[in-house]
Image 1 (cartoon, rainbow, N blue to C red):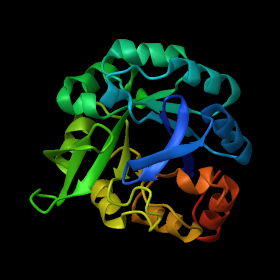
Image 2: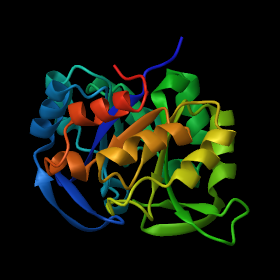
Image 3: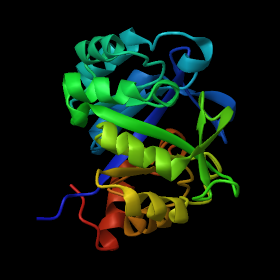
Length: 253
């Protein structure tokens, strides 16, 4: 039986407000996270992803109050990331209403965090968030970045994704830093490369700008498609994206 492709709006949050920029820079206010999450839930979103994009940079905890308020009004899976450094952080977020937890910078700094989350809560809770940029020096041509895309590493993206899956990551959120906010389309080459090495679900992120961008991402290997600006700005609705996927022969809920 085929699994339906998920459509996921992403709320990048800083200081309790949804923000959006281009290539993670020039962040501007895009609204109230609770109001936006409720709107997307009503439009038929399959999940909501909530990323505190400055939590790691500021050495600050994720805004638990916003997570709780969102979970009280949105009855679909909620993935929360940003500033998660320990299993106690995970437990607290789950206690406030999160269903899955995204880890990125802290897992790169200490990969055993992935094992610890998977062992304590199950692999289905652990989402590895990958902020990836192209780099010709890497064996795969892609490296991972940390701190909301601000810091480049020398870590090959595909090698890290493979290691994380072995350690217990249950899902990969693959965000192209190069495409992020450009609305020029998903990085199909990146999605296909990750799909080839991943035995867990892959979420495509970064670059969505038009209805015709979503089906190719699924065809390249994504199990879910994530977008932010096009939804926040009212350019597209969840229903329109699902309709375009359905028209392309993609199974959606």
